[in-house]
Length: 67
Image 1 (tube, rainbow, N blue to C red):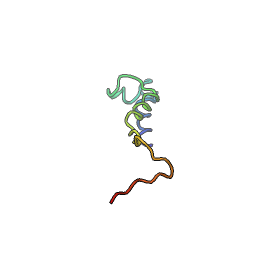
Image 2 (image 1 turned 60 degrees about the vertical axis):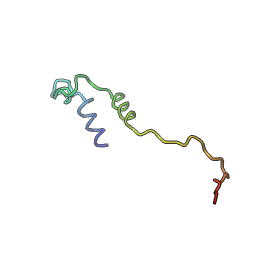
Image 3 (image 1 turned 120 degrees about the horizontal axis):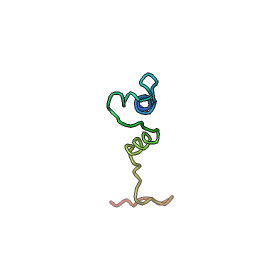
Image 4 (image 1 turned 30 degrees about the horizontal axis):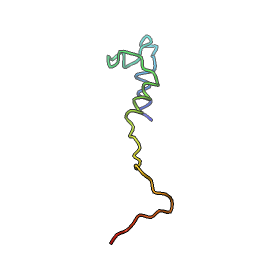
């Protein structure tokens, strides 16, 4: 949650003391004003994809045990 706030503060929020630019733009880290949609897209791209089995057993089916 803190990382999301820091990202918003540095890349999205325009500061009056910096004449309407973001701290990231003032520091030369970014050359554009980011939108929250771009930040969410980066988070979604980085998130782990759910791993699901290719097939599911039907309810009541038991795996066969061989000796």
